[in-house]
Amino acid sequence: MRTEYAWFLPTVRAGDGHKINVKTPERPPTVEYLSEVARIAEKAGFINLLVPTGTHCLDAWVMAGAVAQHTEKIRFCVAFRPGLTSPTFAAQTANTVDKITGGRLTINVVTGSGPSDQMRYGDHLKHDERYDRTEEFLDIVKAIWYSNGEPINYKGKYYDIRDSAIFPDHVTMPHPPLYLGGSSEEGRRVGAKHSDVHMMYAVDIDRIAADVLDMRKRAEEYNRQDEIKFGIRMHIVCRETKQEAHLAAEKIIEGSDLSNTTAWSEMSRKSTESVGQKRINEMGNRESLWITDTLWMGVNKVRGGAGASLVGTPDMIAKALKEYVEVGVDCFILSGWPHVEEAEIFGKEIMPLLQSTEPIVL
Image 1 (cartoon, rainbow, N blue to C red):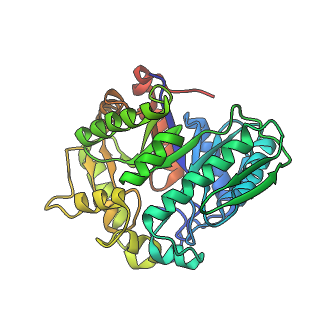
Image 2: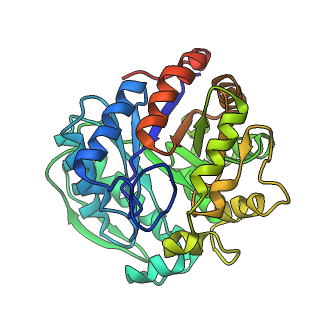
Image 3: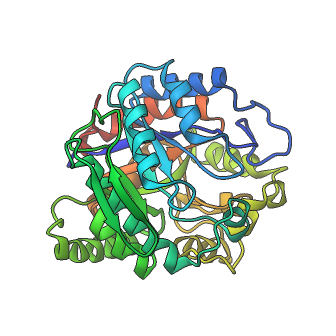
């Protein structure tokens, strides 16, 4: 039942602080500050750091390479963006970061974002086509990883790769783990084939349990039903009392506005192509933002992407996390504002309550 607990590196334009998605960052995303977040997360017991991607973020690969030099053990979950780079160059970049960090790389495969963000990068493919391209992209990257240095060739709809061989080789064997999200039919199909960790936005327990069963069944087609793991992305607001936690949650969205970041604003609209985002938006548009006594959707009002938060005392949050583990979740990618203070609270107050989930230790 070994469970991965991961944290988040706030490289976004809004930076970090006591509020979400503000126009002027309270704590700008400098290498110095982000390194502090990473070190605190490492000390708190987190083993991985999600480094976000998009036109509203600093470049994920550059920042991961920079911050890694100021840490010792923690891994970095950095995004592949099929369509924005060639699979050969992506594999070479990944191998380089894996090598210079001593095998501390995991990879977040981001098939797409909102339409405006896609267009800014010059990517015009529709939702299902993007997943078809991602499948080819990962077919090639994995072929390179398993080639033992021998040149590989690939001819598909989106890529024509000839005699592809690269330096350096990767350190992590058999290859850096792939974290891939997707709630649509196409996303699930590609995830069943390629995900080491199938990522989902946190929603109610019953829906997560159903998704885990569905993906295990789909993975059987590739004889991967025992290999694929499952992760959820969410936020944490932990305080000594339930009342203090609820007040803290309300305060972090005060003064925030979706319009401060176009990419997030677009993702939170009903017109989004993302099935996972539509789920989050539906939950955030219910009469009450409190789905349960602990699961709160307020963050969805001021940013796109992960919109669910666990809010409460250490006991309440630990209990909720354990419920996800019981239905098959192996990995949690968490965040909280400010990221330094919330990571410290998690490490001191919540992590000791999660020992029954067998947290992975580096």
